[in-house]
Amino acid sequence: MTAEKWTARARAIDSFKVMDLLKRARELDDLGQDVVHMEAGEPDFETAPAIKRAAVEAIQTKAIQYTPAGGIAPLRERIARFYQERYGIELGPERVLVTPGASGGLLLAFSLLAEKGQRFMMADPGYPCNPQFLRLVEAGAQRVRVDASTNFQLTAELVRTHWAEDTAGVLLASPANPTGAVVPPEEMSRIAATVRELGGELIVDELYHGLTYGFDAQSALAEDDQVVVLNSFSKYFGMTGWRLGWLVAPADAIAEMEKIAQNLFISPPTLSQYAALAAFEPESIQLFESRRRAFQERRDLLVGGLRELGFVIDTPPQGAFYVYADASALTDNSFDWCWSLLEEDKVAATPGADFSRFDANKYVRFSYTTGLDRIELALERLARRAQRYGS
Image (cartoon, rainbow, N blue to C red; front, side, top):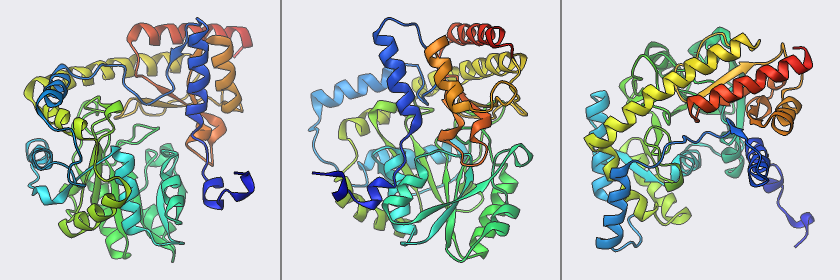
């Protein structure tokens, strides 16, 4: 096989730059270097004990075989009940589709809603893999520049201003990666109404729900029950390697996406599904809430420390576990700066180039997915770097 035979579709897919940096950081780990990892969006907490026990029990008592493409009935029912418990939203299990990670869910949603040549509007900065899913279905991303003035989120006004003939819909993330910004309920309602008026579809990424600080986020389903909502067991529930997510949509859309899922995935991971049932147990929720408080403490330490070092953070992130910091007082090239920070100071952070096409060189994303002692060590190393370079 030669590169000349690779498809234009494959060649157009951009690399996920944080994974390149993570690979190098782990190489340094293997060499005995003490790297502070603040690059990847993966919590440092172990899988909750109840989930582990449920997995062991499933291995011992269940046939770990294919399940229905939409997931096992008990999990779909339990997720639907979770919306009643957490948000006061009544759902039937026929509106829930269990997916192999939220990434699998987004691929299904785009397969259903984005025709070839159409575009989905999304905020820039944003999660770098989203445009790549659109490329795979021969659609595209319509990136709209956002900044601190709009809390790094799209607004109804921006949606209307940037709507084009080839716009199929809007993808929102609330809380967002990399900024941690949340769309307020009233603005979510206005965006949903605007998208509906313009004839498009709204997809809302709620992967970081449960990880908001000082308030509980409301689901977009409370504003418009026709939106497609994505969620995951990776973030709040701490099950990254189990590769399990879900989406909520109108029942007829779920049935159509289940048909696509049958062909793409056969079924979500069986063991992960049985294990995930235990994620909703009171013991597990209590643990996740204690971890949310720990994340808030980490956020506050990191934001304060970065500000003292010259980073600009207009508003502390409202959710997720990232700080998207303006580093323009320290560098005019955050990509090179992050690689230098890793090689020289053994702190791994992600350059803005992964998330933005507009202000990438200004920003660095720090993940506070490591302990307070490690964050303090990273801040010490950043302070020494500032002294060394006079910034």
